[in-house]
Structure formats: C-alpha cells, structure tokens
Length: 334
Image (cartoon, rainbow, N blue to C red):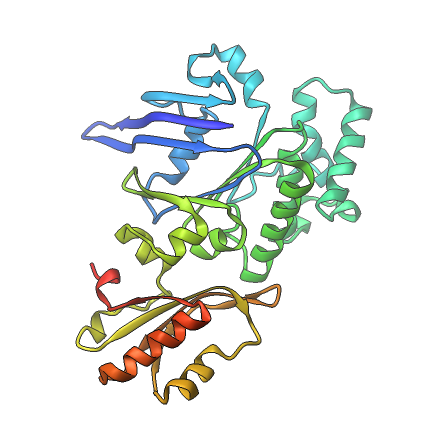
C-alpha cells in the first residue's frame, strides 16, 4: 500500500543544514494500523508529510500502491493525494464553519454538489458519533468532539489511507482511548490503512499492528508491536517502553527483572502467586500495566532478592506460566 525507498528530507536555513529524515525504507501493507514513534525532534511529522508529499522528499521515492507519487506532476499528485486523508494534533477546523460545513469543505473543493456533500457529511458525523452536533461551531465542542469532526472531514473524500499526526496528543487519557477505539472501528469497518504518528508507546500498544521507531531522522527499529514491546532492540525503543520517570540507574547494584504482560487475564494475581509459589519477596520499582478487554497488557520492573536459588525459582515460575521477562538493568541504561 505505502512504500518508502531511501527517503530523506533536508531543510536548509541561513546558518545550517538539517537532515530531518535520513534514508528511510518502510513498507506499510493495506489495512494495517502502523505506528511511527519517537521522541520530539525524531522526524516523525516530517516523515508523515513525506508520505503524502506535503513535504516533498529531498531524495528517495514514495509509492501509493504501484503509483510513484514522487514522479507525478502537481496536477497528478493532487488527484492521488485525495486518496489520503489526514488529521492533526490541533484539529485545524474552520472556526466560522459548523461541524457539518467543516466536513463538507473537502467535498466542495472536489466539486461535489451541495446536496450530495451534505448527505455525505451527515453520514460521516453519524459514523463518528456527532450527528447531534452537526450545527455546532468548533468553539462549542470539546477537544474530543473537534477531533471526531476532523476525522469525519478526513474521511469525506473516501480515502484509502488515513494519516494521523499526533492526533491524540492534545487530549486527556480517557478521550484518547475513545478516539483510538473509533480509529480501530473505522479500520475494521472500512478497511482503511491508518498511519499513526506519536511519541506515546501506550497509543501504539492500544491500536497498532506494527511500529517503526525513529531517532534523529533515522529508522532504528521496526516490527510487530508485540515483538518490539517484549524485546526492544534499540535504546530509544527501550526508553519509550520504560514506565515514565523510571530508570534502573539508581538500582544498578541490585538485580532487576522486567516482566511483560501481553494478554494474560487481568484477574490472575501473577505477582502474588509468584511470591507464594517461590517463597520470595520482591520490590516493585515501577509498572504501567492496564486492563484492556479483561486482559493485562504492559510491564513491571521488579527488584529481586540476592539469593540466586530464589531467583532461579522465580524465573522457572515465570517460564512455566508463559510470562516474558528480561533480567538486569543494562538493557535500559544509556
């Protein structure tokens, strides 16, 4: 569906040259929800704008299906770009237009009749749960409602791809989950390919099938979300996965175990059972587990006792019940 071949983007200012994206090769399959994650300044937003050529790559090729976007004329590109909708962190709605007229806007630009545009917009507002707010202005809507309008607008031209640039960063946690659930439903019902740019691993864990990790414009790791989460290979991925504010540097003289929950029952008392089974006490240093559909997802950092025999019993117990773990603070050090 989307292929990037050796894509790079360079910006030149008066005093320096900035390589925002460097030699990125990426393959996103039809129907996937693909996350692109990294810290601020990693080049995520530049990369997503290279996908629809809002930023034309300095080098490399971008394909949508079999069509090379980077080889098209401006007129040809405008036609192909209609196959890609985009939503932004700050919604980008027209303040003088109602929710309905905001959704109608891309249809007006495309030359669709007013009657047909209104019918399409009303259908999309119903899809995102805002049919009762169609005559409301952006100032009368909450952040989550504004983003739902933006999603409806992005879907107006019936795109094949939806690009989401930090679409949940301005929202509170509960609203973020509701927007992610909406995107997942759109993906399931419409077969849309969705690309999500984010700096939050929880967003990736909640919705994405695959993930690419960026650092200083360079692609440092790709894979399924489960594989990257359970066994991150790059330092930046490890930092993104660590519980916020938690490091192992303060415990470098102690034995640390990182255990990963990837779908165990939320009602299973894993740690309590481990303590009872292994006759061991552990110190929980940090955790970011959550309950999704009655199953536990996330991770926990444990400080282990000094006794190697007890540690052996703990590892054996975790192996027996199928819990993935990594030993030692080293994997998360600088």
